[in-house]
Amino acid sequence: MCNTCVIEGVKETMLNRRKLFMGAAASGAAAIAASAMSARPALAQSTGKVVDLTYVFDEKFPTFDGKPGIAYEEAVNFDKSGYQLWQLTIFEHSGTHIDAPLHFSKDGTSVAELPAESLVCPLCVIDITAKAKDDANAALEAPDVEAWVSANGEIPKGACVAKNSGWGAKVGSPEFRNTPDGKFAFPGFGKSATDLLAEMGAAAIASDSLSLDPGNSADFAVHNSWLPGGRYGIENLANVDQLPAKGATIFVGAPKHARGTGGPARILAIV
Image (cartoon, rainbow, N blue to C red):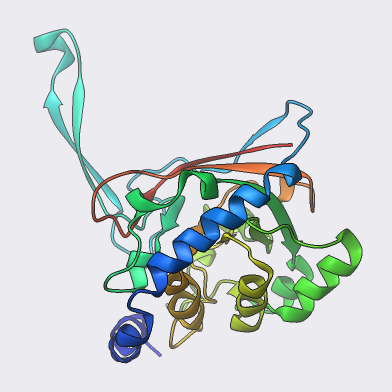
């Protein structure tokens, strides 16, 4: 399936689900904020180590549609004015960035409306690197969540659950985005996992690849189910392999522009 077909094919699904999710995002956001408040005791007792989970964002960073995600135009020249300033043109869903509920729901919560309490979360990291070595479109599924819980204990309400597929090692190469013949190929979350995480009260999911859904997804099932419920996602999370499975706290520096469906973010973890 061509990349354009994937993007166009999802439009009909989104329209059919729109009425179902009207109002769900607002109530979901309130519930997530309540869960986040209850998660305060689970925040890391920090050793003081800070891990930057954000990629440097420039014109070369890979994007979903293949177009540059940022453009620079000189607004003020240093030699002429004694200071310098860029005018930036940025696509919201570029670089390390947030997917807000509004991204996949007509009347959902914008990035500016995300409860502040939901942006500081206990961080749980689920490793699927073994899967991803054998399958570029590997998905984190419910059994992976259940195995994590068996090994580490319950996922705290209000947590951010991050996927470690090892995909960050490919970020400087075309393989981060697609196969040599141009087909999307990268790991993501499976709907069985995100449905379970929603039941557990997680506030966010974070992907170390280009999307929340695997590259071969034809319907954006995770985007269409996770985001309209008032939860948010993070894509292109960096340095996930430097994090423990549990015990870290993530700080999500979400942008706060009105009507935003998401946007580039500075994301840090304290371990």
